[in-house]
Image (cartoon, rainbow, N blue to C red):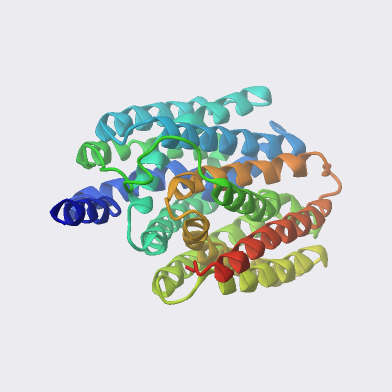
Length: 395
């Protein structure tokens, strides 16, 4: 009886190992924020490269795909094979490599841009892995993810607004990547304050091996759902041009979208533990489809900006709920540790598929692609949810 009690206590404690101080918690969140900063400012910087004729429209999609793909592969491999130890060393190395890749993108064009952003994805993946480890060990992962996403967007908003209003306008894409590299160096003190390591997820999840079949299906649903929005969002500036709008309108739309994402992250944090994930997915899917109809209708500047604001809000509301979706499908949380990698693969898959159907003169095909990917992702998630309900496992 004593042995059973001790085992239960050990499993319960291991299920939600978190940093021991607010400083460590903040450091882990900051490292993840730095890893994903490019997602918020990338459309403006890559769009500037297209405007400067240093990158083609299809090259924009390939560049975004390669960076996210390398980030996702690195996060996934780290989650599968690395022990959650020596996190300070990993964080420091990742920070320095990422700053070097950002600065290395200055003056780049064509294939060299693709190479440098692919290289940047590796340290980004390592930094994100540190933060994912914290989220997966939480009792309420969607709440921690909501906090993470909110701070991520606050930083992205500050950088995007600065770049749109001054840096890119006066110094072009090179100025933007230089600022990005400088900001990344904030990760040095954050790495020094991070925890030295984490404990195991759970006793069951401590064993090696891939997630079970339902966990893999949940990751596949995540892949398609995220790919839908990723395919459309990376072409924000070309979509604005297709509607007869200027690059300034696209940059303004990005800035307002990031502001809306802060509200989305706060809303997701407030809803965590109170609302089940599936209704969130349904509402967000309907909103995305309505937004993409607006994009296709040659909207006025104010409507384009408003639609992009709603897109940002919905994207941040649904993001944190991808983790409890995978936990419902795979209670061992092995799939949850791979959720970030699946999201990044989705963010890479969307632009990759879009690059095959867009041209410098016709971008609207990406909206149809987004709708198809969204329908597939939602269908997979719905099938998992309703079969879980029949078996009595709901989150």
